Picture (tube, rainbow, N blue to C red):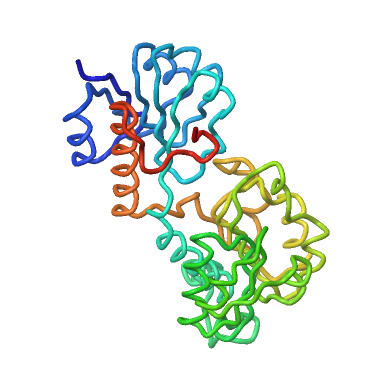
Length: 324
């Protein structure tokens, strides 16, 4: 008898067909909104596997699924998983690293360019019919090429960002990481710096750390005060790694030049969030991996992880903290 699986968001026909070969599947069908936690709890009472897309895997949810054996996340991050509760119940947890590295790196460069050249601000100016004469100095931006880039968190995505910045834009790239990476330094020609030194010297600062108790609010008022007044801050990691109130104040007072954000402390962003009223910030709706191909590839990796887990094979990408 094939194991029962619930898919918490719509996936491609290709992914669904793969899962149907091995499992008895039910899938959330409403494209207009995400499934709520309560709705998900009501759907998984007798399932053994869950293909999850950003759902909070809590003790409460797990209590509603006594037969659950595996949760496969269509994401790299898994901070929304209660790992202790999963361990206690012996539930296998997987994620999808590597697949989205280049796509997120592409978006990071897009945010750097948009913030530096004031793309969204000037787009809005033209759309509003306010371009009445030649472009004066008041509309100038900053150069990206040959500028200094500091990357906080030199993981897989950080390396892809460094490669694009150094070899595409001739940027001088430095990084801060929990541990030095000599092989990366040699291969990409990047420099290791202490965090404060990186903050003080960089023209662009990209935050690429996972969310952990140690990294929550790692960038706050003290760190923004160390940055150049011409610095551009980019966050494509997790919103809670930044003290958002301090970021808003740094942008509002022009303590830093601009920011490009794909993540926020609370998502979706409230319409009254002050960030949405500032001209010197580019805001995106957490779309780092959101291309059709990449999202489909992620879902397929997650589907394979789930099938392997349910059939007693070692999944390719088990969440590190849940490995035996």
